[in-house]
Image (cartoon, rainbow, N blue to C red):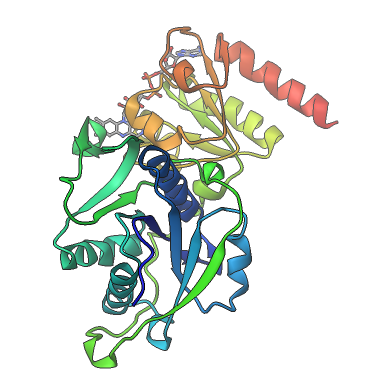
Length: 329
Ligand SMILES: Cc1cc2nc3c(=O)[nH]c(=O)nc-3n(C[C@H](O)[C@H](O)[C@H](O)COP(=O)(O)OP(=O)(O)OC[C@H]3O[C@@H](n4cnc5c(N)ncnc54)[C@H](O)[C@@H]3O)c2cc1C
């Protein structure tokens, strides 16, 4: 079997017949690593090489795309994916293996890493690149950050938290497709494929909203949320919140953004009366454009904001809503 030399190998995941956004975020993380290490980035996914999904990879500039195919991979099982991915890793011999931190990856990636005598550095939120990269992950539900370094022998396996890297920062360019027919023995699959895992039913999917208007404790009372809802409606946005708002029952938990809520990366995130505590920031800092409205000009939210309005939200928000309505006619 041939080998491609040292590289960074990213395993992409398909969701609803598309490569998931978090997979592109994992690829952006791989490019951060690649810059410091001077290594090429390759990607792999389970699909036949004739699958039209590969058109979406051209332009994202992995050096190579491996199309892993086998009938026993058409329905996900941890045994099947572990066997196939292990074969590809033995073939491609990467120095780093990067996954999106999804439910599926949590299911099989630790076992895959263990096959190579390694641990999975899971749920990475930041990478300090360079010849000896440092991986940051949260501890104690976001109260502390831990910095991890790979000891240097063997392959480094890591998975990347949703929203921690920006999908649009995956580098663009040309690529080469290589079919990788996995060899899987049906007797080695110990479980029967079941229905794909779904997180608990949610009536609102904040992660796929293009614009979010998010409200924090600065709103003071439940009745005042209507003010922010009006802006959200004018913008065609979903309403989100910081934790105290959901803890108080003013908005349902499914609208909470942050380390113990949802991770989001919309095109626009408008933070209203939110201070910018780290547990909130980790859930929204990958947004493409952050607008913050806060009466305290030293509030930490302004450190991540692209646009900031230091002012009283009870004056600013109605004026903004009126301006949006006027602009939209
Ligand atoms: C384990 C753990 C997990 C957590 N998980 C999450 C999480 O998932 N999500 C989350 O959000 N938090 C989380 N938190 C809580 C987090 O630490 C903060 O307490 C919380 O984010 C603060 O919410 P806030 O910004 O709405 O409120 P505050 O910190 O009270 O900030 C309110 C802001 O409103 C501004 N303000 C007040 N009046 C006005 C006005 N009239 N006009 C304009 N601005 C005004 C103030 O200047 C202030 O900056 C977690 C904490 C822990 C310990």
